[in-house]
Amino acid sequence: MSCYQPSSRLTTLLCAVGVTLVFTQTTTAPAQDPPPSSYAPVKISEPFAAVVDRMAAAKASVMKRQMDLLKQRYDLDNRPAQGVAMSRGKPIQAGTRARLPEAVSSWEQLARLKPAEMREKGLWPKGFLPLPHPNHAEGGMVFPKFHLDLIKQQEARDLTRFDLDYDLPEHFLPEFPPPIYLTTRLDLGDVSQGQVVTLTNYYELFNGIFNPKQLEGLRLLVTPFPQQQFNQTEDRRTLKASAGVSCFECHVNGHTNAATHLVGDIRPQEFRHRIDTPSLRGVNVQRLFGSQRALRSVEDFTEFEQRAAYFDGDPVIAAKKGVNILDRGSQVHAMAEVQELFDFPPAPKLDIFGKLDPEKATEVEMRGQEVFFGKAQCAVCHPAPYYTDNLMHNLRTERFYKTQMVNGRKASADGPIKTFPLRGVKDSPPYLHDGRLLTLEDTVEFFNLVLGVQLTEQEKADLVAFLLCL
Image (cartoon, rainbow, N blue to C red; front, top):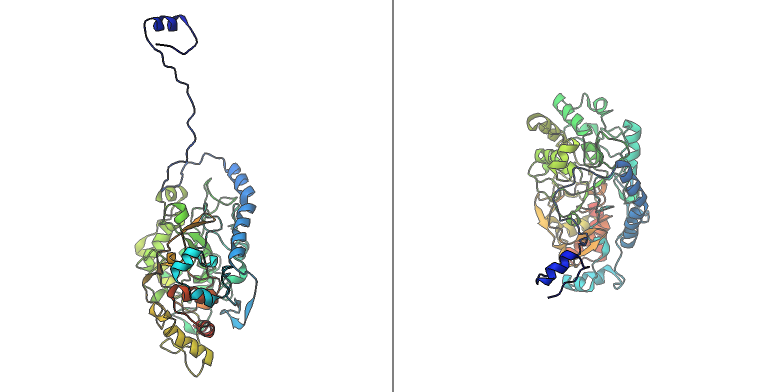
């Protein structure tokens, strides 16, 4: 037997009696990615200043990647429709903005293809794929700049993130500030007086209009509470420690400013869906809440947001950052009561059944209504008068494209989606649960493909004209 090691008296002696020594060289194991976890890290080992330096330095490249994606997907030019505006006068963007695949010459040609053919040839428009968060791997609440500026001016709170910015151009977003219409005081019209309702002015605006319980509910809706990215801890995403965000930070004036976030109830990260903040208008006629969660009451939704959604669905990190536990019997109930007071905007061309009055509507709008309730099949899920069936539907868009990664977002099945009311839809761009559809024309083209209803160009234009009346 042989021995292989530098000689020594002990080695020589052992070899002489037939003992083989085996020496092993210690090596460092290759680094491996940590195993997947449902939890966010609680103890942060990197100094806050280092986090700021690292993420702020990467911000420009992060935003360039997202803006390059948007420009590849959409025509982002500011081209308002003629003679059409939101309730307080902001122009509505016109035209289909999703870009056609290069191999296809028209939307009509694309609509003639079967879903499997689009999937195999990669012809599903990129603008109809799921829209990723501005930085999907990081996620978190992000607010449009106009909201950041006003809150900083009005309340001296700075919600600017050092790591990323909001991505969609302002001309595709709802008007700001949006008007407030109340189901209890139709005679008052817009009660916002052109202001964004915050903790600094809610009492002045609503004292004498709301009862004491409703005033308390509104106070809670405009009170900032800690949230995953906006809090006092070292893993926040603002330079200064923050009191947090309020419900009206996203649902501004009981409507929406199109603030975005990621759903908290999906793991792993790449499967989480971007959220386009839905309007709270018409909550009183709805029976499902959350775009995909199917929460059964606005009380459930209110409590869920504070306990879970604010912290990416992680109760462990919520305990660290200061979760706001609401009392169901008083606080949640009061907040829900206020939310149920926000009405849809006026629609003067609709009758009491939610359909067009022939004496007020144009010929084009009447034709659009016929398409809506007929060939386009829209009314199957969006019946009058509020244009929702209060159900969930799975559009199965994965029929049209192969699973793929898009800026950190795994574009796969969307799953069941709540039927949003279409009343006041012109005030609530962008569209679909993640905001991937920038205009009503985009929405019509999307559903023309998904439903396979083969609308003509004239029928599409008529349908958009009808939707603008709602």
